[in-house]
Length: 131
Image (spheres, rainbow, N blue to C red):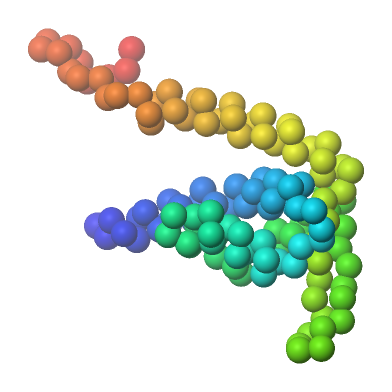
């Protein structure tokens, strides 16, 4: 069993569901439209090891959020390369974000009951099962 591989897979599965929430929150706090590279940089800085979310995973999520009306985007010509697409959260995104935050907090609370709580120790004569 490759422990490092299992940890990377587990983290990838967790990130897949969280990136939309995190990106909406980043855009809600932004004072101006953001380019995906800037969002990726902010996420890397916030991550202890700089690799919580891969930059390539951001683009499809942004497109989906825009398609769903939670973001708007605009294209700006660039003199040093291809045009850049900048994103901004919409009113619909601002309305949905608190609900996603609540769902996240409820999920954390549920998971923490099992993951954060100290493990039960088996007592002599007891069965090793949850009652």
